[in-house]
Image 1 (cartoon, one colour):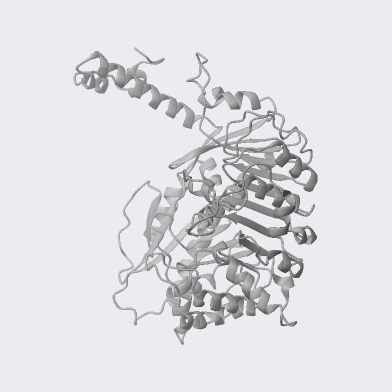
Image 2 (cartoon, one colour; image 1 turned 90 degrees about the vertical axis):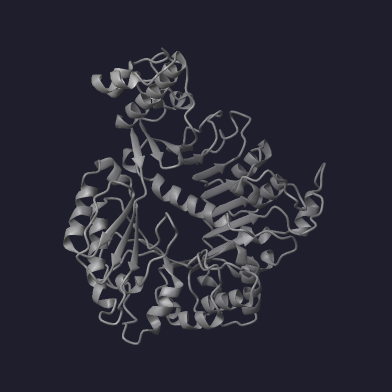
Length: 552
């Protein structure tokens, strides 16, 4: 029998095991069942180990109804339903307290959606519920030691929350640093209510750094210009909080519209510290060019820019007006035209590239810290070719060679080979590089990263068939386990991952993080106090991937 432990060891129940065997009618059935038990045993032995952590994303929907005393149904799943009564809150609290401490530590994001199911909405205003709901959310942040993100959308059906502004005003948890997926339509409805209070939303949130918007994707329509004018008072309120970055990702469905240009105009008029969808970059550039004619516009407030590549664009002429950029992305679409030109082959004359797409002014953005270079094909996993005027690897290297030395974080998402020339460009252009993410990149030389002496953080999704620089203190590998052939590999499967065996001697601390429907994350680190550093990195990376998945 092809297993290292008996069926009885798996089932741990003689009676059940003997009766089950009566349903097995052949040697093949028995052998298949044995293999299934073996896999189950390995899975159980893995999850029991203290170095293997389970990461689940819990989504809570708070139902507000006419009957507050609705009965809570006990469950252990990640999709949670909560009612606005003490019994329901106690049941939910008891469930989360039953989780293992390590699983509680893994939770850095609270998904909390409010669903209004009242039939009569005239008896009580939503402000009457807001204080109690805010207290529940504050308690959630106290339950989870590492929670810092409040997401007003469930991650299951992508349904946005109702009436979030009324609740945000009463939040008091100092742990909240990010509030995201606040539905713009709900803000418009809130401001149209004459009785609602329309100020002091963030008075009790001194550590809030980011505020993100969304639209209801089920409606599949853009906001009208009139709706944006109704939304403008809240934008004006945000303009008085320059320390908060406002993200407007995924707030448009159709992007080549006059309404979108009007939206950007409203945002820029109030000089917000904003992050907008990369699909709007052409309109963004056009507006900045128009604003450049007016000396009163303060370009110094612009800290983030997501740019979609097009040759002969105005990006190089505009960069001198954006000296305080902190982060930037270059997105390379599959093709720029319906009938795309043939990519140049053979030896590339660099002077032609520099004339057609100059970027030398990028070097003068001395406050730039983060750069993300993205290929549409790599993000969408398309079996396609890049129909760009130049080979993609040449364009990537061109961007890197024009980066300022202030860049400390570089992300490359592309189905390209990390060549010696590209590695040399990274080393020479970015002597202060500390964080590097290589996604879908192919590495053929084992010493290709050796000369990146300042590198402290590395994030990859490829097999470790290359040497990790000794300066790297934190390593994230998103890649399936690749087993060796040791006889005792079933005892601690993660220990017998071929890649892990090569790295355990270098890194004293290790975690294997299993995720629902996702590739496990292997984390190696030298400083035990940086255990959960991966959380911000993975969240930001996933956010970027989701953003660039949107059709261009």
